[in-house]
Image 1: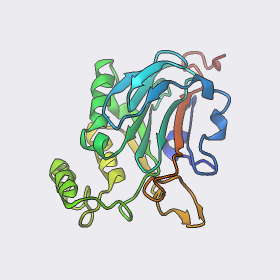
Image 2: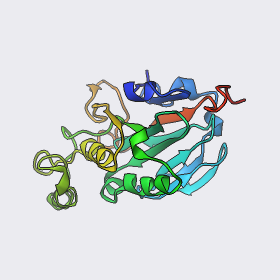
Image 3: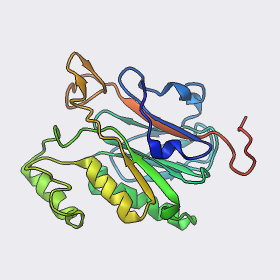
Length: 232
């Protein structure tokens, strides 16, 4: 069964879902799945505006659109999926934030573009979905030190809550709030250790590098805000 954010569930004319191992693509999106953008996630910070169904985004890790019935999707197996929406439901976005994208501040790259087209972050909300948690995400001492220095403004113990351990979810929550988003929801579920070992809840690269499967976090506008009429 897919997971939902209370914050995003309150946005009119928008549906979303965070996939799991048993439901990699949230079932409500199956009918419109062929309309999803074409892209290759590369752990970078390129963000692309999606203008039409099956839009070719090339290599990108962030997407935004005002289009209807276009499912913006993020594939993950430990990285952080972030879904965003204007509170009125008139525009949506989705971001894939692994450690490279997080360190490069992909959310700020996205918001530079959104502000350029007139968006106000205070009128937006977001949900940070399941990802590998600080319980399991051990890294090198050098990478932990680099994150601690890069995100020192977040406060002690946010980016690196214990030695050689990263909390990518907490960093991205901090980034969203620093950008000025009005509401941010955090779904605290670790993709590596959630669920029983014989029946894990999520696909996890750290848990099984040979299992090349992912779950999808998806958001789409389903109703044209100006008319209230579903898009056909």
